[in-house]
Structures are given as C-alpha cells and as structure tokens.
Figure 1: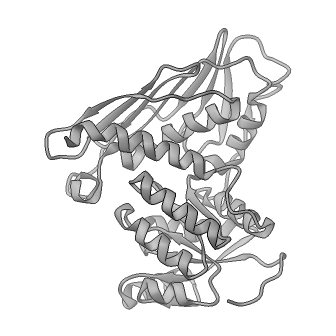
Figure 2: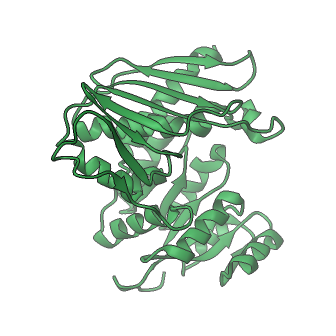
Length: 329
C-alpha cells in the first residue's frame, strides 16, 4: 500500500457498482474534505469501467479480489446486496483494508462478532454505513440531549412502496422491511438510549408476513424508560418525520428524519438547553459526512467509531434477527 500523510484524503475503493455506490461516489468526490474515491469494482470489467468513466475514477476492477489487491486503496465501501456483505468484508479485512459496509452490515450477529474480532486483530476500522448518525444535525441533537428534560417517547418510521419484482421481496436474499429500512429507526432508538445511558431492552415485534414470504411491514415496540414505536414498510408510504418527547415538551426531526437537517421544538416553553432550533443543511446526499468521519477515525488510529459503534450495530442486528425468528419456525 502506498504511504500516506495525515493531510492526504483517505483513498476509497467501492465494491459494487449500483445506485447506492453511485451516490456515495458523488457525495464523497463532490463534497468530502478528507476522503476521495479512486477505484470501483464490479463482477464485470465492462460495468466497472462504465462506472469509472461516468464518475471520473482512475481505476476500474472487474473483480472484488482485484480491488482487495489494489495498493492504492486504503478503505473499501461495501455496496453489494447485504447477503454478500459478510464474505466481502472478510476478504477486504484480510487484504488490509479498512471497511465501511452499507446497512444492514450483515444479517447474523455471529457473523458480525467474527468480523469485529478480525478487524481488531488486524488493527483495522470496521463500521456500518449508518449515515444518519454522522449528519451535523444529528450530532447537534445528541450533543444537546443530556441537557434536556429526560425524554420518554420516540416515534419513528421508514416506509415506501417498492416494486414487487425486486430483491426486497426475495426471502433467499434476506429481503423484507425489517432488514431493508427497519434498521434505521432501530438505530435511532439505540443511539438515543446509548447517549442517555438508558437500557433499551427487547422489543415486542409484530410482522406482516405470509408464510414463505418476506415481512412487508414490521413494528418494533419498546417499553423501557424510553418507550418507542418504530415502523418499517416496503408496501406503504409512512411518516417521514420522527418525534422525540418528554413531559411537557416535544421535538420533531422534520422531513426525511434519516437525512436529518432540521430539528424543531414543538411543545413546552423554550429551554436554555434549546436556545434555537437546529437547521444544518447538507450538500448532496450527505454521505460525505460518514466518509469523512470514517477517515478521521483512521487518521486517529482507532478501530471502532464513537459515532457508529460496533456494539450498537450488534444490538440492532440482534433485534432484527431475533424479531424475524418466529416467522421462520
């Protein structure tokens, strides 16, 4: 691998040439300050080259092994379908690459535990690409949270109508609402509990699922000190705002809360801890913030992100994996 200085951007390769890979590349190369995508890999050289030509990348690889062997690449963004994540993460870690993996990181807690150990043994950073945790507005909210009166309720959802001929409706590919979009509100809940030092407990899970098919909708209800109703769907459009509230007060994460840019005070008298609403717009799709946070962690030599910790990934994976079990029996 080439030598680098702390002033140089982290050099990224992308595994997978789909739509999410394209958005990551455009956000990073158009807006990031500490990161630069330099390589793309796909199973087909022609597809990789077309992506590289379109995005202006200097290197295109027709296999993931070639990406793993590229000495220019320091970190890999894994953007293939999620049933293929675990094997590809392992390949990149064994090749000495730091890894940012699209959500859900994997679909089995045992796989995540094994990969976290491998990354630690090799001194590499492994992080799930839960971009919401890296948006400036979310960082500002979490920074103010401890100074607010204790919240006791969260309501958040993520749902839209998806075409039935896609991978989301294929049980063999771990499709379904919980894995595709349910991880987002679960992550929000886990992060809030973590920030407040609250025990999250286990959710009551309700699935809309026919035998032998994926879950079209999922509801995760938590009854702990921070109660929560978290919804996910791939067959219905759900509310795009999220609400956090406590006795006499409420906050709204406005619009697409998973791309948080505005958080407003809704109820109760303004508090010194909330001197003004949060309005922190982002350029592009905002994925540059997770890439730059990842790069900062690499520069600092740490192998677990303080913003997207591996333990919270594990917690969310466990909730989904266990929640889906009754429907599999």
